[in-house]
Length: 153
Image (cartoon, rainbow, N blue to C red; front, side):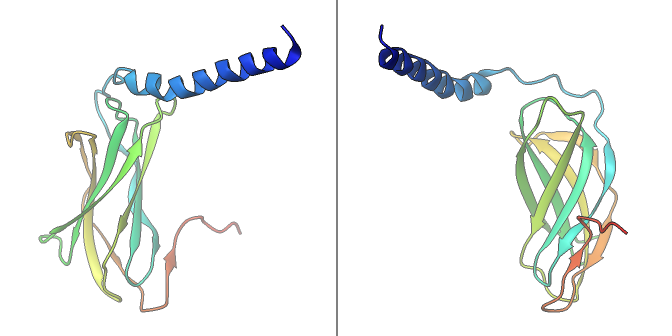
């Protein structure tokens, strides 16, 4: 074989492996479910503007399906958490913790909102953990609240 043929053969083999790898990853069986999921970093506002907010929290890795959702139930009072926002993530089996980040949209400026967080697998089955009720107040129009990244001082 000449050098050009050898290079083409190697490129074809590598290309074939790259095409197959995602399929193999999707065919992996679910990881074992964690016997107990707990919140290891309490939910907090990552950033908030007058009309959007990102809530973030961390749990131990729930295991099970790689597809998961962070879910936030929120509303104008602790007894009226009538809105729901969720964000899809893929679990990293190599990490012991999982960070969830969920964006809340359509908020009103200078308004207090209450919320709880939870997580589910890709089929909507709860991971069995839910936070207590937290609260935040959106800033006035044109302002923001930013808690991450934390400044180094």
